[in-house]
Image (cartoon, rainbow, N blue to C red; front, side, top):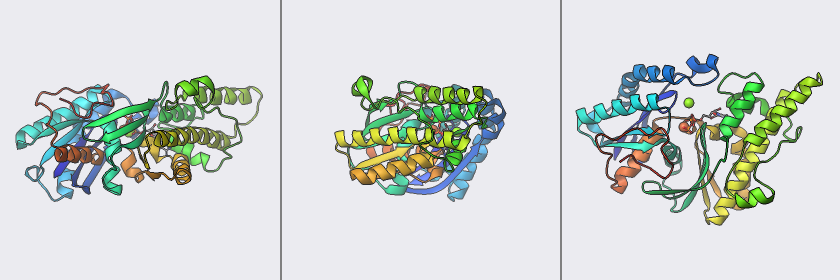
Length: 345
Ligand code: ATP
Ligand code: MG
Ligand code: FE
């Protein structure tokens, strides 16, 4: 099947066309630069940018694939989780297109899209595989029985997401939003063992109680306190070493818990997705641990990790192939869509 996928959960307005497992077009417009000076995404600015970008982005995705709306079998749009005003723009636009062209419409879960997208690069999932989702808002380990019908949350963060933790430390170091990529770049020049950074929920009773859960707020606090101490003592902050030590701690915890999950669920494949999986320290650590544990780690190329329309279209293809019923014409956005809900009803 051919599916048009539309994404507007946060600051990217994106559209893409996927046929089977082939990406025919992929257009992304971002309002990221408009938010940088505020230190975070401003929902009102993002919603307005979506309203302006929607028609040009969808038109370009169709044109790049050499198609018109009548050539697609279905439309998929992210209906949550995300910023309500942003979701409303994408979902109302998609409803209008579906109604006008008389096409089935699926309101899909953006986070599950981050998992589905790996199929464009690595082909169909093996049954019963494990997925690690690391994005701006989510850090979770999921058991994917069937991406179109059933996923279970195995573990999740008890406080901050990994991306959030990076963004917060980045702010302390004076990097502009989003700070994750800056930490990545500086970490490449630093010593990962220069500073002792705790590895949350990996030892003791709490770890035994939460074998697959994550906690990153302690990491953030430890780094913040260390920076304050250095400043109080009049010492210069070794920025590269701070970044390298933070990145090493976070990547190690994620890779270790993901491998433990694979062992527990007898999965020889680990699917990785979400904006934070663009992080080079995490990518290296996952591949290293995967090789040691005999687990094939499927991390897509960077442009498929960050928010895009291809992830939405790919999950749409899975739903059409599985014969899942489209969403009702009046389905609602869900800014807190739970991860075990794949499609809006
Ligand atoms: P969600 O998917 O949970 O709704 P989101 O869509 O806002 O959240 P993504 O776009 O998937 O999040 O990811 C954005 C996050 O990825 C930001 O926190 C950003 O700092 C982080 N990020 C992007 N590239 C890198 C990198 N190279 N290193 C570290 N973090 C990165
Ligand atoms: Mg974004
Ligand atoms: Fe995302």
